Image 1 (tube, rainbow, N blue to C red):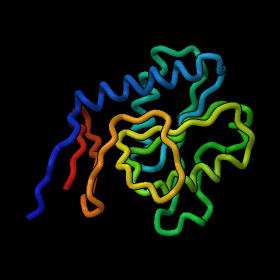
Image 2: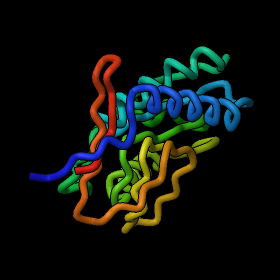
Image 3: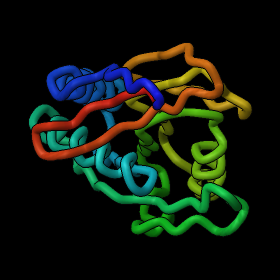
Length: 166
């Protein structure tokens, strides 16, 4: 039986979300329009949490959307809820829960960069430091050095969210 190690609890996730929201606000304080694009499914959930916090502190127009990437075949066209043309000359923050190899994020970045943006940043809750693709994370909750065999998972539940390694 695999051992499960909890690495983040609800309070820690809440604190990280609030900190990331403030970092995004400080980095975009001159932007009138900000798009938070979350990688489906957990990245979008995290983006929604950040969105709630950001709306409390920012006067910018904030739009929340999800992007679906086929993780097994990311070359297939991603499906974004928001037409990327709307993002033209705006600030975009691409959000995911866990950065493993960087593959999913890099293909989402490639898709979004089909239009000129005023600013582009990335954010994750957990950065595993196992990058195979040259992706830089601008706003992150924690960095973990794990073995490649370990799995890092995030569970989002109402007031019982947590992250664990198994």
